[in-house]
Length: 209
Image (cartoon, rainbow, N blue to C red; front, side, top):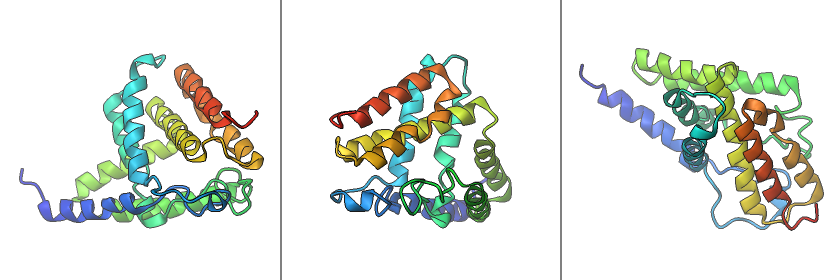
């Protein structure tokens, strides 16, 4: 079967937009910290998630379909090229009006990203686009073990990046939010819970906590 080069090139150009989305920049709390020389992109985040998945695979309490997990890690944030990367901190740093703690905001985020995912994957040949959308939706449903593991890895990598940026200089309200953020995802597996709590300790270093 011949490859549809035109559609694949179109999609790859679109997906390349992940390299231009800067995580944390301009978000509540982060906007008042010293600016980074270079902010991590969503593509950077996705790469380190994939690396972390490889590193923890053998420590998980049950077998994982790594091919499925890797696909989820690579695909899970692609809709942000169109929908944008929403901050869990919300407008006041508490997350109360964000998708993390507000059900209406969470539903709106999902619907917006679903529309974006359909648009993005719709640029691919139909069968391939449907497969990609299926992977994205399976991650969003958070029913499969692989989806739960990838979600935990997503939160752990994000916190590690936050610790690296902050370098022990987080204000108390930001630190408190960060320590609580994503804790439920750690329950995906004992190994991930242990790692996640260790990353929380990284956040607290030099904070006097």
